[in-house]
Length: 191
Image (cartoon, rainbow, N blue to C red; front, side, top):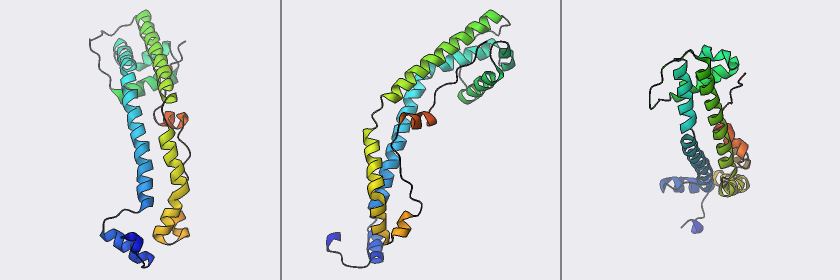
């Protein structure tokens, strides 16, 4: 039907709109965006599974100091205390078994050591997972987007200048881009 069409650009766009046909450049952008969102969702799901033990360890530390994070200043620097408190507020981890608060430096230090080991183990597993992700399909689609989006949009709108408005070339997805969204855990600086 479209191959036999001989009208103006605006008539073509009107006809496509009447048929609820989405222009190719929009479909291409949606495909690239959909792949990116699916990748991030997959990563988030796997990351959440890996975070089970770090969350538990953070809940244990909080329980030992009864939520009084400043008590940790005797063991870790102020920046690390703030980061742990922020993570606790974001995650709201729950203990499976209640732990009584303690003033014992040995118990608090042991809980911090366990947390640090857990965070380090998470970071190792997480970066390994991200490094092994198959990114070839999303990067292929990004290359196709860079090569054809402007051509398709220009053809649909009948103007190269209009097609270029708001266009941004997409770089290949890499580990750093994923880690910028779903990063590693901050390792407390234990004294």
